[in-house]
Amino acid sequence: MELQRYPEAIIPWALTALGLITLVYPKVTGVPLFPVLSYEHLSEYPIWEIPLIYVASYATRAWGA
Image 1 (cartoon, rainbow, N blue to C red):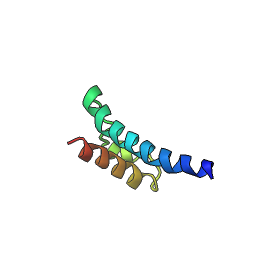
Image 2: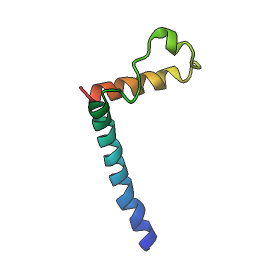
Image 3: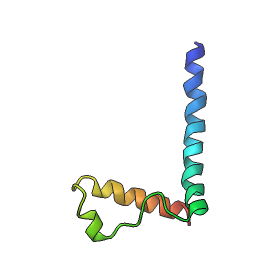
């Protein structure tokens, strides 16, 4: 019974910490978590990774705005 309480407490804190890191890190360092990629860089990735990379890059830039 006691072991079930730890994931219930840790998961929200971990998600909150991850969200704060994605907001604070680019502001402190001046470097985005995911770089802004050009079409030449995106062509180096497999076709199935391109949407994931694009969305991650867009989301981190949108949150930091």
